[in-house]
Image (cartoon, rainbow, N blue to C red):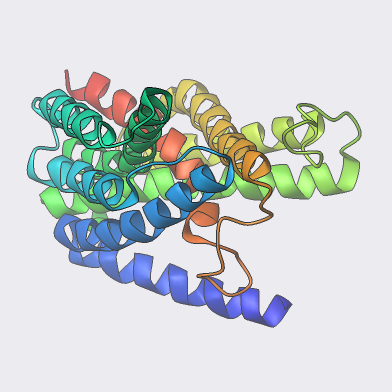
Length: 280
């Protein structure tokens, strides 16, 4: 089992590494694939929890959100796409003979699409993050726009991973005080603190490497870590409602696609807001 998890992790990291090096277009392609599989899993979980939906339309809408984030990373037209999606989902739900079922279908379809579509904000992070000044520790990523894309996406990815790693290691060793056990019995306050410390340190170092004030990590680090934890708990809530242990079986040893990206779905908006504030 451990070997399977390790091999799957190596493949995932390799795919991410290649996409990062090739640039935002390659990252967008990867995220479209991720959105398709994650959306399939979300709508399956919603159905298992008793919330029927329009899965094909919801999946297409989630992909549209990702593509919108690539075409217009500044997000000025994003609300228009959301509005169109809400309208079309409502029209599709009208086919249900019981209006109460129709409402559930409408709400669940829009929720699933927007939830998975949040992953598209990773593209906003890459596209709007400030350029890397020459002479900065991470300037080797490239002084052009592609270098900034790589650097800011890397900050988001490593920030989430550092939180997960810190929370797991500290929680496993000294975790005693549990919280939100009705959603995830294994989570501890000690693990939460360990994760926040880890992601704050990593985020501050990466900000410095990108030529930014490292003290920004004292704000972004905890915010990113808390968002990552909330994303994990949100997916756990969905899985518990559906009576499922994992979101799927797509990735050997790791579960489903949603199990791998749940933290990013909540962390990406936080980092996107930070980089937008930097460039405002």
